[in-house]
Length: 512
Image (cartoon, rainbow, N blue to C red):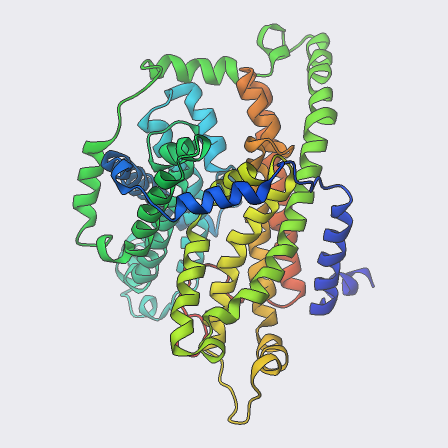
């Protein structure tokens, strides 16, 4: 009986109600107050500055650094991800390793790597490459597994596994691999922008300084240039231009700031910094050492991991439901049937801008306007993810075949369109749930008491061993939510629906 219940399909209404009730309960634990004395005055000053962008203040070298980190970081991550994708489906160890890599946010990686490489190009490149390797390995493996196997059947007997892959499978999946890598480069630009907030000399460094000092004209110019890079990416990132971009990126990378003795820094990090303090001097065979280890770990667990994880889950749950409501409102803006040939391009531009703005930057800006609380981070996560889900839902709506006597207006939305898209809508939300949780943890660096808040405090106090334990807790929490999301998609019978932002759709609205 329990086996039957475990596999009983879950209804869309029950799943939606469950998430809404969980978010409603989370509101009781959330700090949503507005701490700013006059947020509307702050907003007016911000908008006045944004309306007069100061393009003369934008340093060309910061743009070059932003592109260079993205090109090389994504290139390293995609290359490693491709190698890991080959054994990914057959090796549980590889899948766990990749899941751990992608569960750690780029900013967490950067904060750890700074202890070894200082504030250097190596830190920025590896902070992007490591999580992207885990992400690309998973997606590339899915692309390879979904490929047509017809070419393998005509190979001569005795063909080696490497030859079979290179000549029979790789040509069939190369286009999809390239398409996803180019999309991942767009994500890399966002990641590079955010890394500037911790000191790397990208556009994000100057953007953070401009916002903090109230130079909103400069901030507007930096944002306009960044959106221009994202919007024109298809024009200047092509197979023919990649060799030039790679060489130019290597030449333009900034010099190291901080330690230059990488070997000593790495040895110190592995043998001292990340080793829990009680184990550094105590003998492993001595029971007192393990007693001291528990005495060291217990306050971390009760005073940081448990409250940090709880606040991270609260933030993610509320942000997920607000994302859902926002996406339901926004997706008609990009659907031809609702906005027509003139309104649809404007709606798509709006949502592309929203989805291209990193959550960390949005949260930083909203914190300046609303003051420190969970409200700015919830809004930042919801705005960004609603833009993504709304954009994708609009593409699916354009692929629907409507009957000739289909209603119009609200009836078209509520009775003809949304019921047919709701399964896909839930698939996107459950996929974004894991990503919202991951971003919610890192937003603690801005002062919200999620796990990232405690990680930042530990690193500021040079307690790297504590920071590593807290990051490990973030990984475990993220993997648990990912597993729950997968199970829910299976029970809702939507596990096979597309969830990747870059997954192309045919004119019929189905995966290409």
